[in-house]
Image (cartoon, rainbow, N blue to C red; front, side, top):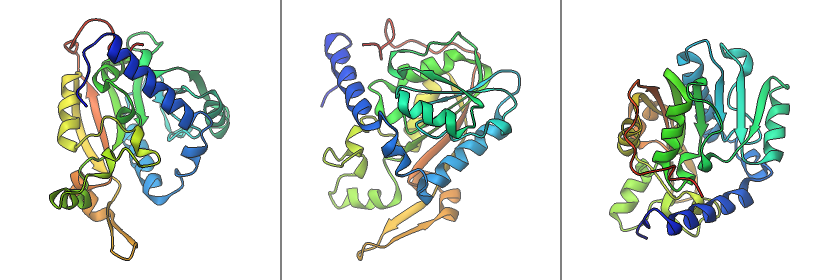
Length: 263
């Protein structure tokens, strides 16, 4: 479907996506159902390590779209941790899981972030960018609330993992664009590694590293085999893309007027 022009149509599409995501993730149950799976546990651990190793001291760290469990240990950070989500129930669970050491903020990331410019030394967001109608607008907001030199770490499912590349040659669609999948139908903006780098650069970030969790393959009998070594060698073939990028001093060029994610 072609992207509608900015205006009533785009606001309607964004509002529809907002309602659909809220229905699926309002209580954190769906996220709790998969975060302990090895696939997601590795993804979350890699992202957390990139943040802990690269965040500059002096300001808080924000986890955007934290769900019921933060990826970060507040004790491992050089400053306070702020956890943010649109689901109040999930947010309360995240604060409890952090032992009360994280400050919770209820927000909707598609409406702009309610923080002053330069508030954070680091911003971590996992499996969020593929859910929003205008990822570039979200990244512009991330750029705004990060201090110069601040670190952005994000994860998103890979549109072109190894198995889907071969499936596409055989005429089968990648899983990330399946409108019949029970939850992937909410992934409206899938990324490859090269596209993610391009979008980050356009939003005023300098990509530092692309990592992945594992390169997996479903055998004919249904058995899943995976390699972490191959993911380290060729992260663009992995199931999840995990990217670290540094906020540059330049202000990103606006694509239009106002906040395109607003509705």
